Length: 94
Image (cartoon, rainbow, N blue to C red; front, side, top):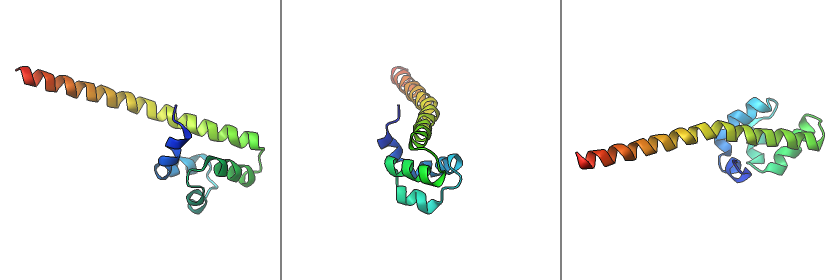
């Protein structure tokens, strides 16, 4: 599972997905939040007038969705890497 540290490190890349999820968030607000989970939860809670627990649930779901989207790419990357190693080994012996 993608830890929140990974979300924080990839914040700029995830800003588009964040805006898709929470369309009322501005670029400036997301820049100020800068990947800080508690600030994101608080901003969602106040901006959308929802309970903190619901805001936390949404943030957790967002992180989970990022994991789900990233996992197939990771597997593809591993498969490509494995295939490249296999090709290199064969070329050494031919």
